[in-house]
Image (cartoon, rainbow, N blue to C red; front, side):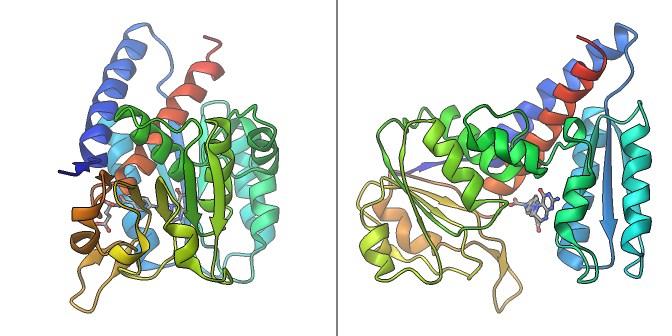
Length: 284
Ligand SMILES: Nc1nc(=O)c2c([nH]1)NC[C@@H]1CN(c3ccc(C(=O)N[C@@H](CCC(=O)O)C(=O)O)cc3)C=[N+]21
């Protein structure tokens, strides 16, 4: 029987621990950790994600600020808003929800966030620190994946990990984190030839493709661990991953469900890094 890697359960447990820490923190008379999430425009998926982040932050007891900005905002104006939060000593974490409207340069925005407040781990300095194996802030989705696998004692040393997807927010940072765990890593993507030949070698297969139920059992080695990063709506409007869950289930040793797998872990790692920064900024 396959082990279900229940991200929701671990997320709940970790968020309870964080809530207890915040209570202790308050009792010591310290300032409550503060997270600012900046949401630009009306993208419906982004709204749901931001709402979930806000709910978690409030449940934990953080000071949660969601700054909603109009689609038409000028890049300079956004940069000034970010700078004001950089300067504000009561703010521990700043996250700008991606994707951004087309007229705004993502690289400029990510560079503008103070790296010490970059709880998303997307600032080039934090990307570079991860690259050289000395990470400070981690991108939350890959960090959540590693945390979930570790919780279930899934050993990565020397294992063959195949990641499908080369994005800056999932595939590439996960590659570095897996290397830091001594795994052997392959990244496949839309131009990869004979994808199945790659995926069938995977002890751990990570799907970050963006196509509903793309990975069927013929892509998966017997006994593999399958991690599903996908978030797609199928024709019935149901949330499904990049993995055909029912089809691969009999073949795998462990698998993350969608919903309730990687998604809740992503949010939890954001909260964890906000707590850590809050602690640092108070000099503890
Ligand atoms: N600057 C930035 N940081 C991010 O971390 C970031 C981002 N931009 N842009 C988009 C992606 C996506 N993302 C998710 C967060 C939570 C769920 C989540 O909570 N998923 C639930 C279900 C949610 C639902 O019901 O739709 C689950 O899997 O159980 C999913 C995806 C964060 N992202």
